[in-house]
Length: 165
Image: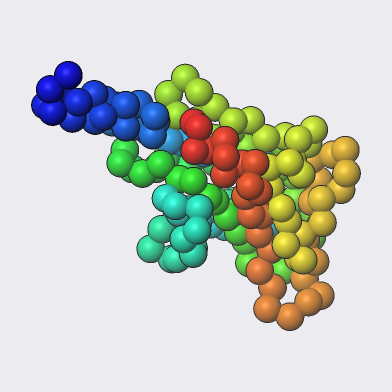
């Protein structure tokens, strides 16, 4: 085998063993089906590397009009962005109290990760301001603590599955 052939073989192996992919047109989307009874906002932070810190520049905010019933919020990431770690801030309205998160679906083309009440704790960790009411889609927000900032953070399993998505 010549040096040139060996070099091409190594490049070929590296591209496929590293799960290298530059498929144009693939966009990552995060959809949340939820119920907020009072006006508020949701902020989604993301990183493109699991060890990066969350920064304002890599976040998207959507306002929510309070109402009874499930609403769908859609976060579309730019084509070149593939998030590997997420944080979902659950608003700043301290009188919100109870919210429902029916499903969260993170998709890229035909593949998706579906999060619901059955598998919620496997994929997302609530911080001290959020209590997931087991076997339901209800979450209690605790405004009694200082520096109110309820959020959900991706687990290592979700990060692993986002890498594979």
